[in-house]
Every structure is written in C-alpha cells, then in structure tokens.
Image (cartoon, rainbow, N blue to C red; front, side):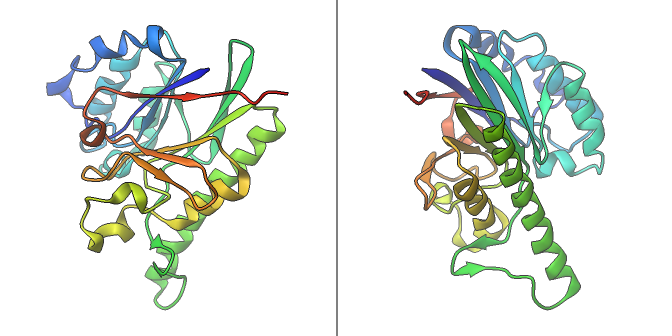
Length: 243
C-alpha cells in the first residue's frame, strides 16, 4: 500500500512560520510522499516562499508541489519555485517526477491548471483575443499534464498521481457558488487525466468545495484545500497493481 499525503491552500507567510511543521514531522510514520496542491503563499512573494520552504525542509518523505494563483500574484512564480526547490521540493509545471517506494515506482505529474468551466457550461476559443488566450492557456496546462502522465507510464510507473491546483471536475466544487465554477477549474484537466491514465487526482483552490469526486473515466479526485480537509494533510492509499 502506497500512502499519499496531500494538502493545498496553506497560504503561509511570515506570521505563520512553524504552524504546520509539527504535523509535517509526523509524515514519516503515516505517508510515503507529500503533495502540495498550490496556493502555498498569500501573495507569491519570495519572503513568503521562504517560509513555505523552511516548513517542509528536511522532511522524512519527498515533497512535490505545484503553484497556485496566489503564488503568481506578485508576478514572480519562478522565484517562488526556486525557493522551494532550494529545500528539495520538486516543483512541477507540465512535467513529472518518480520515486521508488518499497520497490514500487510511483510517479507524480503536475500543473497549476487553469479555469474555463465544465462540460455544457465551458468557455471556448472563440471571439475576442483575450478569450482565446484564456482557453489556450488552460488547454496548454492540460496538455502538459497529459503529456507528463504518458511519460510516467513509459518510465514504468506502477502508480501515477495527477497533481493540480485548479479542479478537473465540478464534483469537488459542490459548496462553491455555481457562478464561479469556470474560475475554479476546467474539464480539459479531466480529459487529460482520463486520456492518459492516473490512479488519483489531487487539487486545491476550492475552499468551500467538497473533498471527494471522480472523473468521467473513473479516476478518483480529491480536493485537498486545507479549509476543506480541515487538517494539516489528508492521506490517501493506493494499491499497486498485481500481476
């Protein structure tokens, strides 16, 4: 059994340094990897990113992250990612990483993702240049996720996890105002997950949403925004395939 710990939307800053570290220090007893599903900072500053980096530095399990919209707020996501990477965090955007967990190869593919809405009520690449650019960006994020998941399969991963900030499905948005669903996720992410295959999809962003959902293709989706799971992290169990 592979144990995946995950949390998003921790929104750390200088005033919250150390608040999650006691819980994170227990990960070696209950998890094999920690996934951070974006919105790790409040305003995407280098100072805030340093707080996050120190919170997860030297943990007993690998740490994998994607950035969220808050981490882009100060227009320096590269600096945020650099601070995290300096402490060994694998920051993903359209790529993946693998780990050997007790002889099982586990892969994580990640992208921030973007909005656009869901089947029947989604935006399209039509009209003004601004609208076309919006959806093209969302599609590019989804394409990167799908490509990374396929690459993980070719690398022999027995288990694959899709890590995003924006949601791939509307299920896990239940509780949010329906009017803002298009700004919380995109069906393109779910299409990429189903087309390329995954054993679990993890996202954040929807603070008022619901933890449990599923893609149309049957992949489990979990909203791990901290206000939703109401704890430092949730742990999900994945069973490696048997011959």
